[in-house]
Length: 91
Image (tube, rainbow, N blue to C red):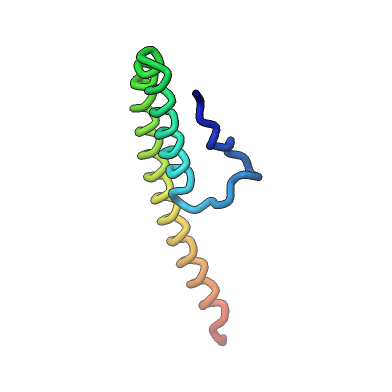
């Protein structure tokens, strides 16, 4: 028995680019696979145990990169606002 609840990630099925969107999808996918592997038997479970740590690493990396991106965009936005304010000052 295989669960078919997760749609492939494409531009059309991606409703949001917010931080955490993809990690949430990874968590759901991980839970579905864990259940499928449990139902399939020990061979599938052994293979899943090899793959699952890589999934955790990918989730941590995605969270870290999202934080770095958020901070970088915030710094750039502050710099751009400063520039705008300087340009609006009367000369």
